[in-house]
Image (cartoon, rainbow, N blue to C red; front, side):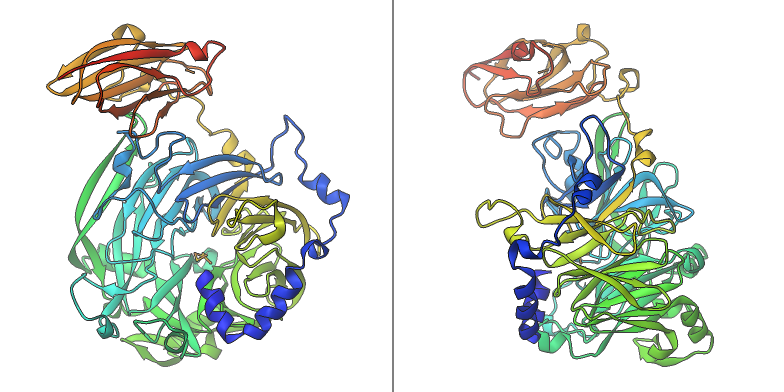
Length: 640
Ligand code: CUK
Ligand code: CUA
């Protein structure tokens, strides 16, 4: 996003100044909140929120859980990060989740969450998120709120189109913001045009366990594939991807990349391609990518390196791939709840382009083509167009829907949310955001059944919104009431990292299924023990395995001798509590990883490599009872 500011800043510097002038004027622009606004976000002590909101953490690599309307933060779910709070990415059980073909990569840039669906409605089973940098998609359980699976995406780079899902969670998709040589090879960068390719990846989701598996990759021309959205309802079976740099320039200085007045939305008939590959179509290509799965019953993750991927040349599947011309470097690519309208927000534009799915089918039927790009038909713009929203704003990015015939589009440059009507294309309201809004989110706004009560705007620049905290401010989110004709700004809350997108759902969808306890009798961790009486120390050469039990408020064993400098000491800690929300932590002095937090019924392992002779303490890091401070022990480390 910061790129865009820069680029657009050059082109439209006059207007930028104009807008930033009026929007960053401090409290005068705050929208004069009424006391009823305060009431609407007030959730009294002991009461619970009406909605969950899952905000991406951007460069934090995490997904953060909030309540709406209160804006209270409940949990940070580590996905593409090492997270000391829980030991995620440090513990032996979770480290394999972060393995890639490039090695152990404990960071990524998380942009877009999407909740699983059945029949186009949120089903609250999983939430999928993307890693943008080293292309990956993760699946997070909405029962345990933990990352359960991460799959790497070969042949792509900058997985920004993810992780949107089809309406029965048949597929989660990945795109490629950067086109790259496919397969990767050593070649001159300035020979990009015609040689680099854009892989669009369709990942099958197993309906029972949610396990992901790459079904096929469509190898597209070397554009930049930005965002995507599935068709729904009548357009179920299609997927839409916005593109920019259809000039295929290797350097995206403004002059190069914005020559074309129109780029494309690529429309992919995935059902047709699925049929083609089910009948033996496609070409298997060597590819290296990691597939990492966490098993809830063993509490362990396993990493497998995959060696090939099935690729599809779109020109070999007639009627499967089309290009819809869309003005001014479209960024957002959103589909309305009916599946009829495909909205392309040209980020260098003032207007919003709306394509019609029916028009698209008619244009395909009548072969209203304006030519071809590498053999892929380019549909005639006027033929597919449904309407243009004359917004009066600048820099449209993303659109969500309230399910009542209204759409809400963010404008990055003019810092506002604009409400407009589907089919009349008339703007009916607009409200400023503070400041420079990226995505917005209506719970279920990405499904056939949105819950159009609130919209959350996620802003890129915070400036004067909060007490200053040095040069860096946390990003802000703003919640608006959209139940009436006019939007009303209710509240403003700080977020973690950089929230790009978010997904939300009614609290009732998750409340019942939220897991409370891992059952001890179901604990299949290879180093678990059934009860404290099984606690022991076992040596295998230099490796020492300590089978440890925790229960309020002691460790068994708590005096450990026989350890030598140079040993690798594995603390396998089983929490033998069976009470909701009673974790125990474990940390030993000089540990060069983090501590671990072990939930009741769970076993976790941390490795400790003592470097110094002595008697070294360990303790529980979670205040678990009145005798928490008594929950401690010693390890005696002798010379080698
Ligand atoms: S986003 Cu990822 S650059 Cu507009 Cu979906 Cu912010
Ligand atoms: Cu267990 Cu503190």
